[in-house]
Length: 181
Image (cartoon, rainbow, N blue to C red):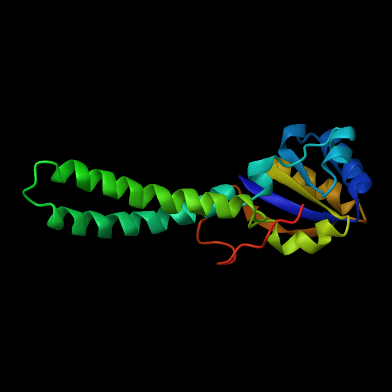
């Protein structure tokens, strides 16, 4: 599934585009709005981003997990050699590996919880200035054609790109951008 992103000047125009996309046959649950005023988005009955979609928790947690795998491998090797022959050596090695894997994963998630989602980082300033980002999840060519037809008739929508629906831990900036709202 691909996420098609569009920049709009405000939440009111995002509501209008969302209604037009729904009337074109795109499901309401596949249209998400990124805007700084979550209360107004809820009043307009729009699909506002949830915590995991708005922040980089999952993406940074995946990066922490990758670091943890490398760290756990090294810790496991050294712990096994250090405790070789000890009756509790196997349990100690497993425990040390779990700690070495879990801590970076947890730390990555915590860092990501205070950072913008890597897909939204390029549009951070636009959102902070009152603009809106509309993300439309498209899974088949018919929906893509309907969406393109609807958006082409909508003058204030500016195409901002296409993002993959799956998280890619290698994508985005190395240091996440601090989440301000």
